[in-house]
Amino acid sequence: MNIEFTKQEKELLVYKLKHYFTEELDQDIGQFDAEFLLDFFGKEMGIYYYNRGLSDAQDIFKSRVDSITDAIYELEVPTEFSGK
Image (cartoon, rainbow, N blue to C red; front, side):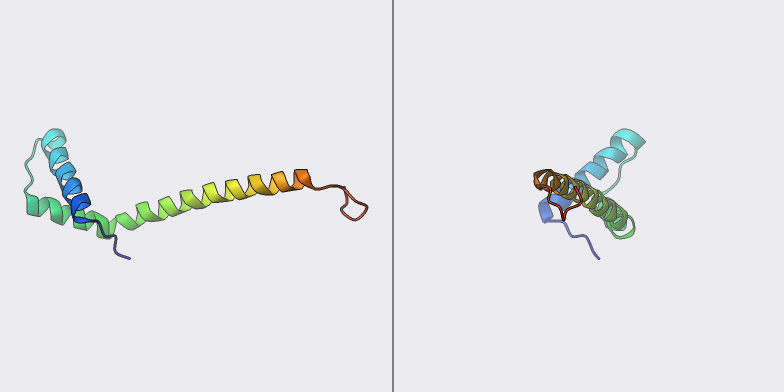
């Protein structure tokens, strides 16, 4: 899977990389190097962030489904067949 960004998103991410290198590492990084580094992170590490995001979304979804299931059980009227 290849993570794709719009032109504007990529420009912003490259800007942030260049800014980080300048401010935090006191090094200048050129446009080409910043784009190359961004592509490397996207290819080699992006999938880990992507998978973590999916896992977090699944956890939220499961929590919401459990909450809805509990609410439905609260609405159920006991009968001699329901075991309540």
